[in-house]
Length: 128
Image (cartoon, helix red, strand yellow):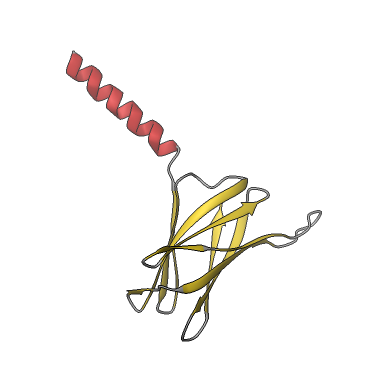
């Protein structure tokens, strides 16, 4: 009976953790791949994202990475946007915080400016 109780408790705990799953998404433009994560689910207000950036399979280090999240204007609602410059956590990993004023589909532009080479932009969406 104790074993059955432990199994049920583990299943219940696992199911509850799935409800509050962290955010994760992959974005790609040509040879640039970005893995986007957040420790918490995306919500209205301040959200911190971690970006791992690779180009041609190699981590992009020592770049200036900036973010722009926006929601275009809709009938009865003005356009909204949030911009920030990320901080480097080292080894191709960057962290930035965006303020998303309401739920819905937000366009996310990730601008990558390496010290040498061509600047690039990766576009994706975040829906919550």
